[in-house]
Length: 247
Ligand code: SAM
Image (cartoon, rainbow, N blue to C red):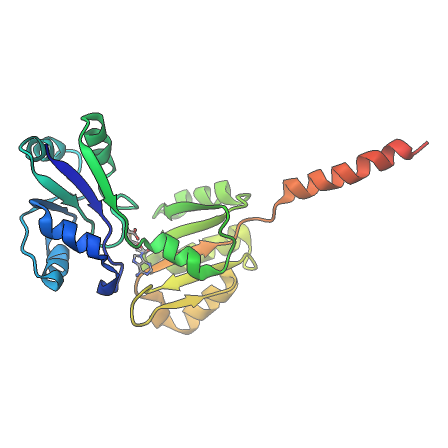
């Protein structure tokens, strides 16, 4: 029977492709790719010329029957996206859900993901965090989402496009305050990797002063709101016995 391997690929530095990823890609009968040209660069770097099948946001549902056909014919398939882990703000979720329902054997070859790399770089709490992916592109919807996140106490990871980063920072400053802790991790694993911080206002100032920093690939890691509830609970624990002492 066929099987599928979900394979993480580098987010900028080709050395991050693991030996296992390289072997699984080399052994695959067919590779499902988000963008053929993007994938070709990776294939060239490891010297393979596999058969490919497109799987992108516009066809990831309609392709499922065809992919099931390949698997029923016994093929070993691999799924990659343009960079990082497939399915993480990338195509693949509907496919994996359906293959699981169909009882297909699935394995994962974990690789880099910009989200976790940015979190590790940020120096913000990592014990609990949440991944927010891309904020809505339209300002009203983005502000609504940010209002919903205002009281979130976990560190939050966002992906953002270069042409929207200033608008997003401005919305965050207006709704959460410029003093809120944040780090912008740019061009992770690439030549000009940098982490800009340590508050929303400081990132905004740095990007307006150096417009070249508004380019490239970027993740924003936002500090959570202070844990108000547990503070209040502590106070409650202290005050209750004292109040009982009062006449
Ligand atoms: N699946 C990918 C992953 O696991 O990292 C993410 C795909 S998403 C379509 C692309 C976004 O990831 C970019 O817009 C950027 O926010 C972030 N990203 C990807 N590579 C990056 C890098 N080298 N440095 C910083 N952010 C990166």
